[in-house]
Amino acid sequence: MQIRPMTKEDCVQVAAIEATSFSVPWSLKAFTETVEKENFRYFVAEEEGEIIGYCGFLFVLDEAEIPNVCVKSSARKRGVGKQMMSVLMEEAKKLGMAVLYLEVRESNTPARALYKSLGFEENGIRKNFYEHPVEHAVLMSKTL
Image 1 (cartoon, one colour):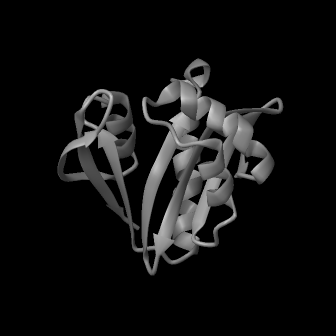
Image 2 (spheres, one colour):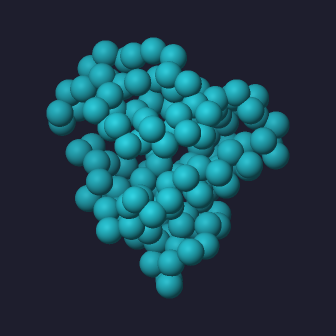
C-alpha cells in the first residue's frame, strides 16, 4: 500500500467510495474542485492501482479542518485509516498548523477510537449535525 497526494485523476474512484460510504456524499465535482485549491491537502491510499482510502484537510492560517477520512469497506480494519491520518498529520505539521479539527458521527465508535489513538480529544457536540439519519457530531481536536 502506498499513501500519496490525491490527483484529479483519482477523484472518480474517490467519489465512488464516498457514494457507498456516506448518506450525504460529496460529489465528483466537489472532489475535483477541492484537489485544485491551494488551501487543501488530500491523500489517497492506493493498492495495486486501486484507491482504497482517502483523507484530507483544509487550512486557514495555522488551523486545519479534516472534512473527509474514508476507507473502502473491503479494506477496513487493516490500519489504512491510521496510516493515512499519520501522513495527513505530518503534512499539517510541515505547513505550520497548530491544531487539527474534525467532526465524527456520535455512533461511529471505530472512527472515534482511531482519532483518540492518534491523540485527538473530544471537545463537544454539534446537535443534529448529520442527516440521513439525523445524528449528533462529536467535535474533536488535536494540538500539533
